Image (cartoon, rainbow, N blue to C red; front, top):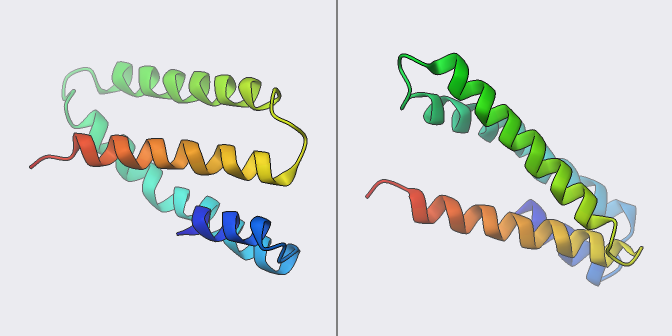
Length: 102
């Protein structure tokens, strides 16, 4: 919802009044979701939780660095940056839906 609101705020040119609250919702929700994701991942490694946590952290750090490096190739406009965030958010959401236990 936050990413969609950010996209709308940029397309409809709402300015900071529309963009900042949408950014706060989308980034703030990561604080609630991320620890649960890590706990669910580590659940599958009861004997090697420390190593699993280290590998997960390295993967997160590496993928964030890769996304950051690739985003420098985008045009320098707010729409391109928010579009990149939106696409990556949709990929993450689709991945989550595909890996859910049925």
